Image (cartoon, rainbow, N blue to C red; front, side):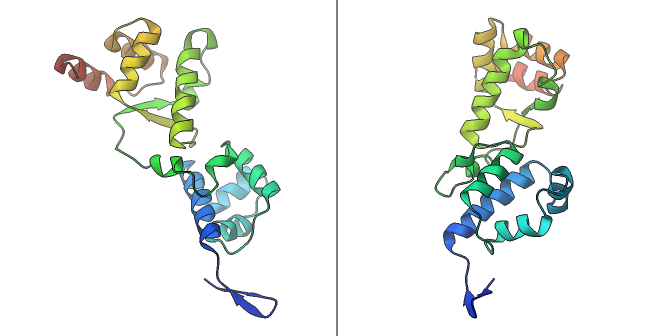
Length: 180
């Protein structure tokens, strides 16, 4: 898309398009439409403005980018072009799904290790939807070591807490039986 700037047409730079793509990906990860952003921000972020940032049609200042990153709850580095972690968020299909919203309501003395582990995975993947997080079988084995329990027992505990999808039990049991 071109735009008129001082009587001349201007094409968004690759940097602006890449930055906009990252903004769009984070917004979509959080299940928000452009109008949803406007509503959630109580009008602070206008749909038309965020849309123009996402298309690369409008330059975003560092200050505005930092404020938008804060609004989305992501580190600003995740929005900057050249950071591959946001692309990694669209990787393999999930089998074990953590409910991050339920995790926030648990007692930190018991769920603290899981909370920290989940935050680390989010940072590594650039996955900041804030609602759910997929984890791998290896993650369950690592968490089992941290909690000093078998993966199956820990899976049952996470299911009872309401932070892990019930289907995970069968996946973890299959993995343990296979010795994977």
